[in-house]
Image: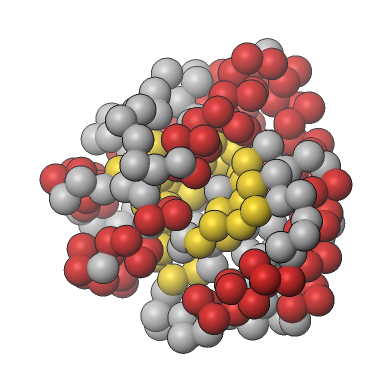
Length: 239
């Protein structure tokens, strides 16, 4: 498996506080069969400082150099407050310096002009991936609005914890509906602690039961490879 959304870098957001904790998380990921990780600290300048991200990323990368796992840098961008920075410094904030941008929205509202913002990203050559939309209560209650968003060209990443049911039955039902419709391109751990990788492993088995092994491998591994190995002419299919 290839994880494209997790909070493993120590001392930069609500993930681990020490490098020892970061290494423990990576060991747990390796144990369940993850061999590549794009680490995605929050980029939300009103809440978190990003000054130490690059420095601490390379400290972790050096510490795990003899492991059977490799890490790459990206961000989970809070799009509303950070859109200008994304346009000005796209390679700094995209996943592994690719054209793919992982972004999150508030959990309870639909931001004004979000569809237009997604189209603007595309016009700048950036492919947006929405992080855990199943946890946005507005979309849970308004499937049609969510369909309108992804029809603008927005790829979809859902969290393992949502599949397992940790965020409640309504979130799990919505997540299953998205997987049944095959509008999900990625499942990620969104791990903040070592135990989250056991949830990631469980989510793979659940999705395989829901949708079959071929689609499950596509959204846990194959689509992610396009991001890990840029530049690439390959396009991630929305089907």
